Image (tube, rainbow, N blue to C red):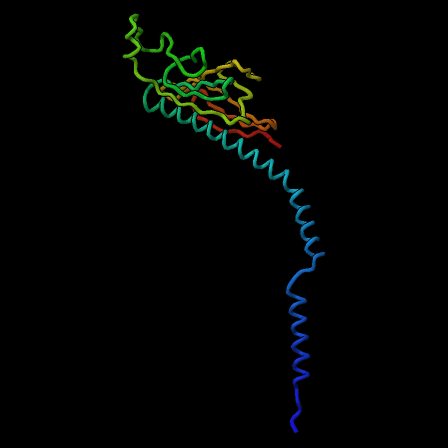
Length: 209
């Protein structure tokens, strides 16, 4: 007479099913513990991440300012004209132009001044014959500002809202030389240095810890 194995097979199947269910998920307590650990790690890492993002933002802006200075020098070399970088501390911007100029009374644009190299006519039609100047404006982000300016023998360690400085690049590649420091609200800073002899622009990062 054959022996039935139905009971044993059913028991093994139930045991296997329980094992699968037992190993296939997490309990509520385990999930709470994992979430608590994740929250703790994120809470410890968040300040460092925020700091790194702030430094990255400032570094990117400093690289853009340095690139603008290098472009100014290259234009002076390639065109044989004098180029100027004007630092407008009131509007927190850098104005690049190919002639010595001054901001108008509204502080919105450059106006040509006497002795810029073009012959000044006394009649009202003289201005129409003047070549149109190259003019580029780089606006600093709202949370970044010019904190220090040193051009030639002029040093302003705390430029005010009315401060305007001009850095000149000559056609032979030389310049007046100087250092422009930009900073953020956390007092982190970068220095854009311009060598007076070669006109080479370099970027320096002080200790921003």
